[in-house]
Length: 341
Image (cartoon, rainbow, N blue to C red; front, side, top):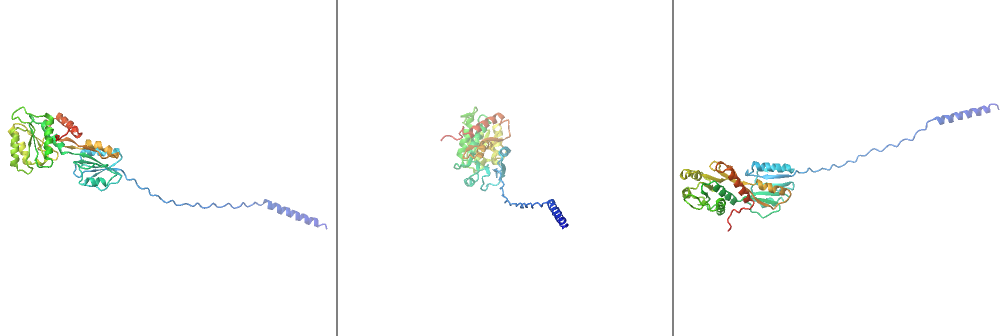
């Protein structure tokens, strides 16, 4: 009877101790959720095409380009962000839109086909071109009559007493037009060109035979010119033969005067006082900006200039200035080289 309260007390103490130990035990935190692994979605690589640089092409198989033309085209290309490509083959394949301008310094035989094969490219072609207008073709005309006109003008300028003449065969291409333009160019200087001293005839004179005529046949014509004391001559390219040139220069002793020969720039320079030819640079400077802007179908004329002067006491600076002024008006169409029919 006495032990029962003690037993209960012990049980109570043990219960309290267990309860306290349970309260003191740390509570386990719930496990944190594991974040899902990041999934990298592969992105397909997109190939960006490399832009084709814009360019312009100079086609010059005959080597007609001058240092001035090369410098101008190089500067134009650099200023407008274009690559300049020079081609010496006579023809080029069809071009894409990246080719902005193609310059031909001599017209290809199949010009219409070349131009139509590249409709997104502007073409500038120099030469005696007979072509229908095309929206992507501009032409710099080089007219044989312009050369003959300016040859007559220069020969008359440097002649003594207006005594000038031309050797132009009567059976070469454009013979009649050349002769007519030469006469008009000479008379542009002096009108009727009547000499002061005898023998008195209207100058200029013409010596005309077949291009295949013998030297003896041509010598008859040259002797007639000698009798008229002619001292300045235009020699057509077809007559640039050593025996003809030597015969003309040999007249100096017979006429008691110097003999001056005017030729084209295709002739050897040694025996000529001056050579003339076409300068396409002013026309290029006019057409290039318009071609870059996409404007075609234009036409202009190349200007004639003195490409070599071996005697500036005869072809003086003042005469060169006059020559250039007349040549500029001729190219602009202000002067008509051929007689009105």
